[in-house]
Amino acid sequence: MSVLVASPVTQQLTAKLRQRAIELRSLLQQHAGAAVSATDNPPEVLDFKDVAAEDRQAIIDEVALAHATTELNQIGAALRRVGDGSYGECLDCGEPIDARRLFALPATAFCTACQAIQERPAMPRR
Ligand SMILES: [Zn+2]
Image (tube, protein in one colour):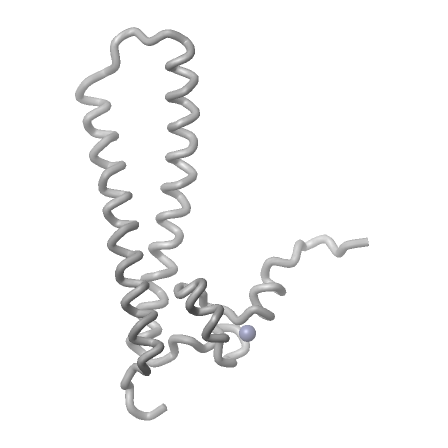
């Protein structure tokens, strides 16, 4: 493509990506705010049940935030590809990524086949 005019599908997907990025940023900001207020107001004595519940919640939050950060990075990369006109092409084989796949996973950089290769475990199955 010589002219960088995004197709209607790409425009729709870009809107999805931007919306998701806003959600993820606000999630990360909320967490940053919560961490600060927790330090400002150390909790009073808690019984063990509460502590265990809080620990579990903290672990869940950490996993969710790690995922959110990864997804935000992927979205950022996808939006850069929109900018340079390569969005929707597989980074690995260069083939167009199936539109249904893009609608399900707008930030994906790989077609189904290349993703499957990447996710294949290092040890061959017997
Ligand atoms: Zn591919």
